[in-house]
Image (cartoon, rainbow, N blue to C red):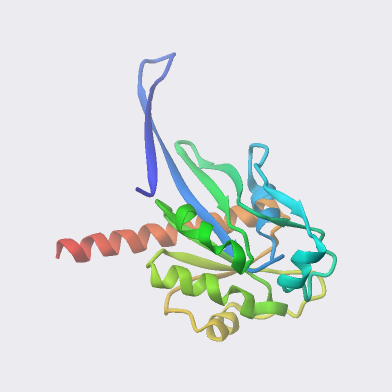
Length: 205
């Protein structure tokens, strides 16, 4: 299941309201801004599992281009955002290093879709996430996190460089900005909804 519904009775008029909660993954390479995005958009205090980078970890993880990074996610980030009345998203940020990939299968269970964050300075770092979701037919959008000082590329250029399936959305964003992050999530929900509807119609047909 990609969502949960909960029924509640309004205290004032006795009407029933139905709340929809969707599970979304936020994935991408090491140091691309996953924790930042979840923290920026979450309306609750985000749950983080960050640890200080150790010398041993630096020998394993590629920190090129993110030399100033001092912490890393070792399990997941968690946050929640209400898109509109009756629709909330539960956000699960995945760890970016290969050594934590055993967690991805658990985190992806029941997900409606995913955001793959990309850094154009290290675009190859998001290839594993793109492959993961494509092979499992989990709808995703690629969100290019526009870092200060990084060269700007258009969505079409990024799509070609990543060899994305036709129709996979690519959007530019600032992971630090709540409104920018929210727009990415709305784009994902709309795209994933169309994909799931099309698959349902194909199965019925």
